[in-house]
Image 1 (cartoon, rainbow, N blue to C red):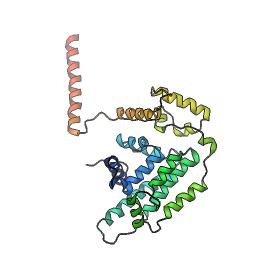
Image 2 (image 1 turned 45 degrees about the vertical axis):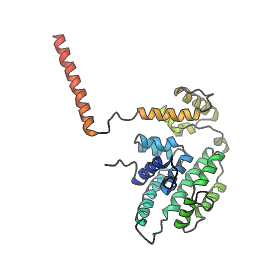
Image 3 (image 1 turned 30 degrees about the horizontal axis):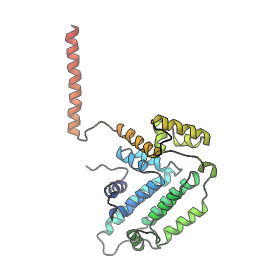
Image 4 (image 1 turned 30 degrees about the vertical axis):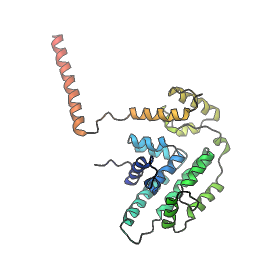
Length: 274
């Protein structure tokens, strides 16, 4: 049976992203995969992929909420991905396609996530460029996404207009913007929540980040320290995966072997004692 991570739409999106990220062809520019790519720009690849790799949906949800996105809105986003997938699958067999309003709604929700980061944390210019270029707008440089926007959206400028409006009307909090937050999974591994981290002053956060790099044995003067931290988090999470072969029958045999070994050791010790 296929393992479902959160729901079928997110599972398909993550699987298709992993299949296509090297070739970067049609599948890589399909809507669900682009949603994953947009989330990666906002958060990070490790935030989006690591919970999937260790099959921990709770961590995935917490990662999406780390910039202030609410539980209620996240639930709507997850549901809308499913609704998009249903209509999209049905349209594959129809000569006259049904309207799929979730195409625009989902992009607006992801823009809202982006705005939460802009307001409460900090956006790099490259992040802004990468994010906008992934949206389905007439300005997009990828012909596949431009074509899909023309075919799917009732108003081809709706997503573009919403993005520009939200970016213009929401300004970041300067005090928070100066803070340098690391991957939130690093703080979680050390036993802290993002709520407690956000409550730290800039000076306290800097000290905490020193502790994070020290915990993962990373030199802070390393040029690629951010990459090294991402890799260390990934390695840590992989070690925490359940020790299983992936085959239930084999796992049962392994457990029986361990039990038999323990029994034999007990018998041997009994004879040695008596």
